[in-house]
Length: 209
Image 1: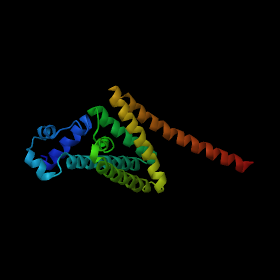
Image 2 (image 1 turned 60 degrees about the vertical axis):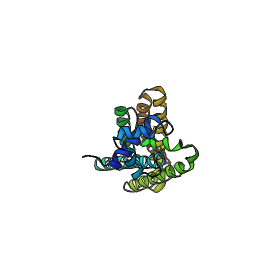
Image 3 (image 1 turned 120 degrees about the horizontal axis):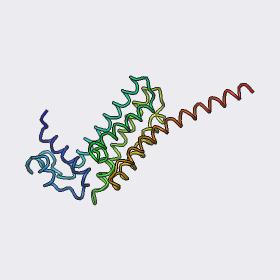
Image 4 (image 1 turned 135 degrees about the vertical axis):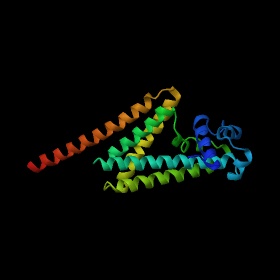
C-alpha cells in the first residue's frame, strides 16, 4: 500500500531520528528520505521538525502498543501466562533490533529528550506515551487475572532492561546485550516460578508440622 505524504514524513522522521538523534537530523534529511517537498512538510507540520518529531514518537509508541497486545494475545492463545507474554514481547523487540540494527520505539524515550530549549515539550509528550503503555499493560494483564500493579511491574522491568541493553548495544555495535536481555527476562520467569514453588513447599511443611 502506498503511503500518504503524512505517513512518508512520519516514517522517514522516525527512522532518521532513531539513527541520528534530534539535533543531528535536519529538515533536508527528512525531505530527501521521504521524497516530498518542503511545502508539504509544513502543510502537515506547521511547527516543522518539532511537530514532526512528536508525530514520529506517537507512531513509534503505537508500534510498541501493538507489539504488547500481539505478544499477550499469543501467550493467551497458547495457554501461557503474563510472564510468557513479556518474554514474547522481548523476543519481538530483539528480532526487530537484530534485523534493523536499531529500533523505532526507542524514539519515544531517547529522541524526545534531545530537544534543547523545547525539552519540556518533548518530556511532556514522552510522559503521555508511558502513561499509555502503563494502561495497556494493566488492560492486558487484567485478561490474565492480574491486578494493576502485577500487570505493570513485569512490563516496566522489561522496558528498563531492554532500554539499557539497547543503549549498550548501540555503544558496542553488537546485538549481544539485547540477546542477553531476552535471556535474563526468561530466567526471571524461571526464578519467579521456583520462588512460588518454594513458598508453596514452605506452606505445605508448616501445615504438616
